[in-house]
Length: 378
Image (cartoon, rainbow, N blue to C red; front, side, top):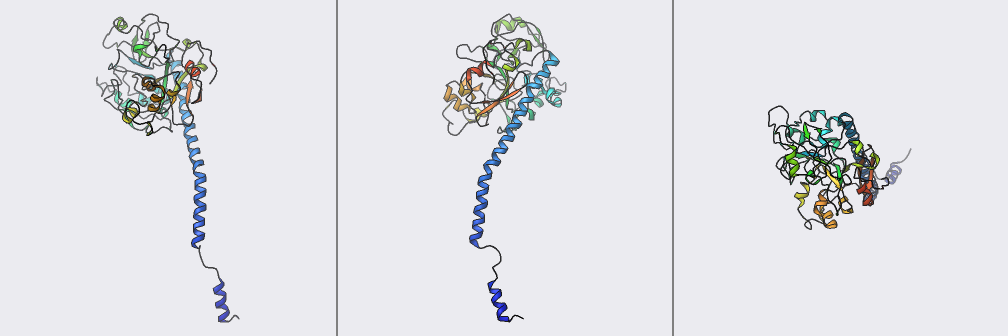
């Protein structure tokens, strides 16, 4: 049997319970180091997941467009308007037309083709209200990497600047733009026409306005000059005002460059970096009000062009203006917040990631439907 003195000595030799302060600090330092090592990997994994979701979204859009074409015999219009720039009402655009083909029939059921998309309310009291369409949040039109896409925006220009619009991430390819012949812009007022008549989506009557050899710069989604049947406005009168207008949507047979060599949809998201703020035209508010608005078919809000200027791929409108010296080109540019590039979808339904250092001559040639340029693959 141990004596009380022996028991007391054994008790004194027992190690103290818990950690010492030094041990605790060492453990905290190790945990901090592990977090510092793992956090970039976690962030990279999240960014990769967002980029994959973005690619999936943009891959679905050309498939919906091709399904629309199968049902209607032609591609949807880039945009449509019965008159000239700049306060003429805007009607259906490509993104509205394909809503039933991306499982958004419930949103499309609110669309009234007889009223402007810019209408503040249901003007003819028929139960169809375009104000509900233009503020609808369409997940398929948003890239998860983009910032603030759940916000409503009032655009800075055009007939829709006094009403709210939902944002998006993808724009249709209206065509190519070059410095020597800027003949294809996103607004039809300076675009070359196709010949032939017919009925465009939404009950718009198209008119044959004569031939103009401009398809070398035209893309799959030009804006259309359409005559409003409700007002009875005559196509010939409009033709005299705008003799270079496009009057019918593109049909697949007109894409003679090949579907796999013609761009259809691309990413467009822009921010204004603090480093360049104040050095270019406009302000942060102006930049935010020029973001992609999926239902707004006026000029460059749901359409853009490809131009042989690498600065137009910058996801910063201000930096683009500083780099190119061309604010108009930057309004009609592309860009994303993905590192090193953005996604484009081709007219055959496929999608690609295009790096920022792509040959701009190649990218520009891929924006036309009948340019007959010798092009390589993306």
